[in-house]
Image (cartoon, rainbow, N blue to C red):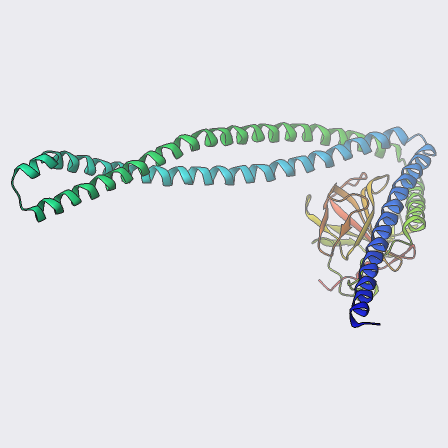
Length: 385
C-alpha cells in the first residue's frame, strides 16, 4: 500500500470518528431533552394527583399559591425594570456627556470662525489684483498669494468642522429626548408594578390568615406537615425515577468530593438545624432553615441541572437541583425563581431569591441535601462560616 493511500485511509478514519462523536453527542443531548420533557409532564401529572386528594384547605391553599406566585412574578418584573432603568440612565448620561462635549467644541469653533472671518475681512482689503498693481516684487507677491490660499483652505476646514458639530448636535437632541421619554415610561411602569405588588402582598396576608385560622391545634398542624412531607417525597421519587440516568457534564468535581467545602446557599443565620425537633417534638427538621433578608440571592451550592422549579404546596416556590451520584439539593420558600426546569447551573449561580412563600411567617431559606432520596445533614457538606 502506498504512503498516500495510508494517509488517505487515516484521514477518512478520523473524519468518520469525529462524525460518530458528533452524532453520539447530538443523540445524547436529544435523549436528555426528551428526559426533561418527560419529567415536566410527569411532575404536572403528579401535581394534579396531589391536588385531587387535598381536603377542605385546597381552595385556601389555591388562593395562597396564586397570590404568592403572582408576588414572585411581579418581583421579577420589578427587578427587570430596575435593570432597564439603570441601563437607560447610563445611556442617557452618555448622550448628555456627548452633548456637553459637542457644545464645548461648538463654542471653541465659533470663536475660531469669528477670528477667521475678521482676518478674511482684513485680507480682503488687499485683493490679489491690488497686490499685483502695487508693483510689489514677484517673490513677495508669490508668498502673499500662497499665504492667501493657505488661509482660505484653513477657513474652509474650520467652517466644515463647525458645520459637522452643528449637525451632530441636531442628530443628538432627538435621541436624548427619546431616551428621556423612555426613562419616564419605565419609571411609570415601575410605580404601577409596585402598587400591584402591594395589593398582591395584601391578598397573600389574607389568604395566609384564613389558612392559619383552620389550624385549630397542634394535631392539625402535624397532620398538615406530614401530608406536605409525603407530597415532597412523592415528588422526589418521581424526579429520581425520571432523571436518574441523565449524565452531568464531565470535567467538573464530583459532589461527593466536595463534602465540607460547598458554599452556603445564602448568607444568614441558621434558626433550625437538621434533626432538631419541630411541632412539639413530634417531627424533625430534614434540612436547615436560614433566616435572611427578603430578596437576598440564593445560589446553587454545586453544578448540576434544575429538575424542579415551581410552586409546591408546603414549600412555596421550590427549586431542586440534581448534582449526579444520587445527590439533590433543595431550596424552598423562595420569593422568586430565576431558573426553570432543565436549566444547567454552576456553583455560585444565583438561582432564586429569599422569601417566605409557602405560608411562612418570616423570610428564610429552607435548604436540604438528599442522597439517594434520603435527607442528610447539610452542615456537614457546607464550608465553615
